[in-house]
Image (cartoon, rainbow, N blue to C red; front, side, top):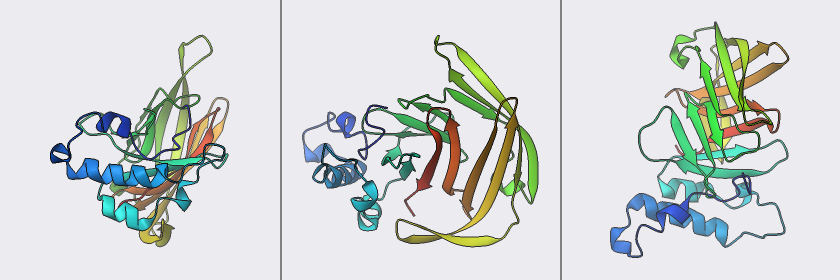
Length: 222
């Protein structure tokens, strides 16, 4: 990912559709509004912190799904939901980088360092996990010879079922916490998910791979 998703959304693609406001959908107008908020504050010589630029007011006014990610080195950015049907949800950044989620769980990335090429899991849906569940997970990456190699894990996920409140961009969400530990041949990974009553993963800390380590993912829209 060239700039690790430092801008808000893929307006390079959207603005090419039309130069006339008559043809702009409300979604495109909302994305432009948020894009302009970031562009006017961008300083090339500094790391852009979208938490200081993208406000709750802007998020609510946009009225579109918005995803926030943060890497271990503190770099962060936002993405918007790519339109159309596919396996899982694909979220798109301004430079074309994407993150695909299924049930809020990382399934694939493109344009990021050490991309996750694909993932499969037999994990039950969130409502089916009453206290705990055991399942398998497989993560696929490309090696130095551009050959796919997979890492297989046996995973345990558990929750005590209690509800708590977490603040995401100045809004409190009621969630249940799920803790997942996956053990493989060479390493163990720990993922944490905070899931709301609609089954949306509002916040998670998920293992991406050796290059990026863990990443924080938050769903911003209400």
